[in-house]
Image 1: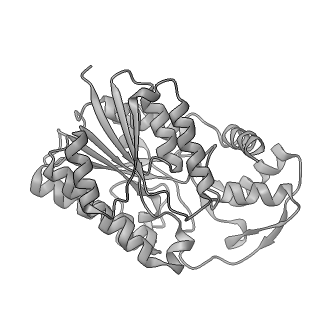
Image 2: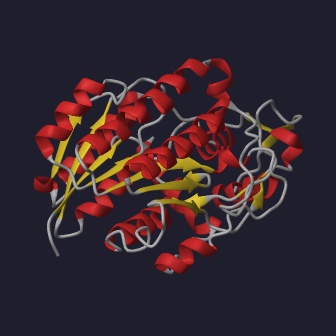
Length: 330
């Protein structure tokens, strides 16, 4: 196989960290990671992730630059210097709650920043751009499970709207400039080294310290939790397809769901944590919050056709792995 140089933006983030480690195992993959290392959550976690990548046995195939995708000139200089084959854009401002408080963070990071990525991909003739979208684009869609062809015109929060914008921008570049782009709609990714603003971290710590947890929508929210290893394996398989799946399309544009197709109510999810910790949660049931999506569940049939995607991690096993990591980390 010919050598491939891959840029992963957001390499110090949760998915970027795991994907960097996964792809470094491929003999002919060389990874360049960038991240702005912002303080949206504890920077210590980001630096520790990077430290682990640099300790990897394939560390000689990894380079890191502190770069912000909002800076077009920084990106342009990096693209010119490194001559990438593939871009995987995982850099973004995450979090639904935060988007209600600071929407400007999503406009600058997720829209301006992504626009800079697209323009550099066009300018330097990148062979394929993969980018993180989200199940949040499905918004008010009430039909479960979600198909890629379902209507996504009615997001319920600014985060989801910014991800829908990414898909529209990518389509324009694919149509106008024949740039192959694939949007990856992630469904509630979780696992070791996960973000501290995610529910698994918050619930686990609160249960362990006898603090109350809040369950919105009275615990009836449904989420399609997807373990990080299943996501990374799927992305790796897509890359190994060498564009074959996308060049069949008249416009080299694709959108793919990345979920487990094992939806679970939040109250049952908490019960899984309780069982593993052998400790009961103190629960405060509250109403649905502004911007919340009631339920998510991925229809993975398209991804299964392309790469035989079969997410194998059951929620009990994934949570157990996470809690073991959290115990070691703390």
